[in-house]
Length: 184
Image 1 (cartoon, rainbow, N blue to C red):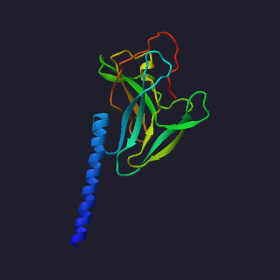
Image 2 (image 1 turned 135 degrees about the horizontal axis):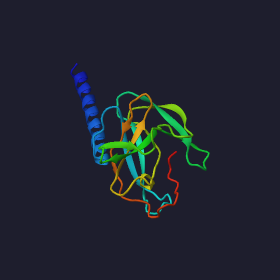
Image 3 (image 1 turned 135 degrees about the vertical axis):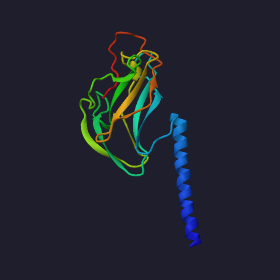
Image 4 (image 1 turned 180 degrees about the vertical axis):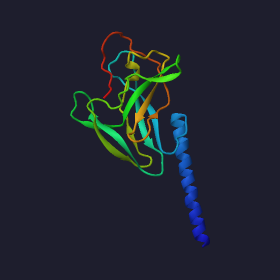
């Protein structure tokens, strides 16, 4: 009986240490703790999309930090306009902070499902995530340097999940040119 009690205690201690390690890793990478359940984060990368002045792209990711799997709505979309490959992405929108009204405003209106989307579902197991696509947010004309943006992910039956804010710190250096900024 004493051996069983020690084994159970060791397993519980191991789970607590693993959970703390995951939280510390998330804290170091994203500067906040991840709550239990579905959670959205933004990954920033350096990239060259051919838009002068734009060197960053952002990828919203929906992750499951819960103890059980969750079924979420996703879209199968073409990888790019000239591609025949489909990728699975969670529907999302980009919002801009309006300092006057102190509210987030969608830059795409009310549409949450992109055109060309083949809606389906995906099961997210604990610690699994799904992308929302890669976007050069600062390439949109509605943003200026100093503005704040965020993604809102729409996982279907679950409530919309916003990411943390992104500070826009760059803008296209050539104005009036209709650059193609990836948005599905």
